[in-house]
Image (cartoon, rainbow, N blue to C red):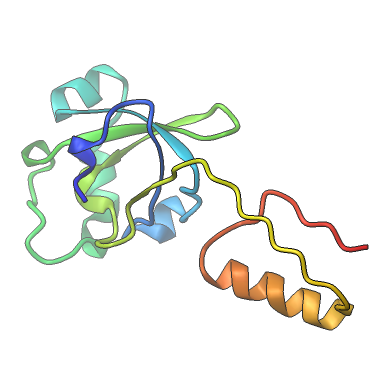
Length: 134
């Protein structure tokens, strides 16, 4: 999947190679747009410094010159925004969130099993919106 083909306003999730610098809290974020390094600079993003900080974590073949690839801006559910380089997206992790909700009801469950189920969900890099244990 190519992020440049995803329309602005789409809810997406992904991971990045430079997770040491940016973390991997890119779940259900809104894609605000993709653009060139020139536009990124006009938006106040220092792509030269950012590239120097992350280049060692990027896969082989990524251009050394940060003007040779494009950037994108996301908005977190909290309202904050961030600009990232497109090659920073970890291969195979970009997905479009279709906004559907999963409800699972498990009867006759104890606290230990509940904790295991939640751990299994978290291991899939999915954060539950809410949990109820009664």
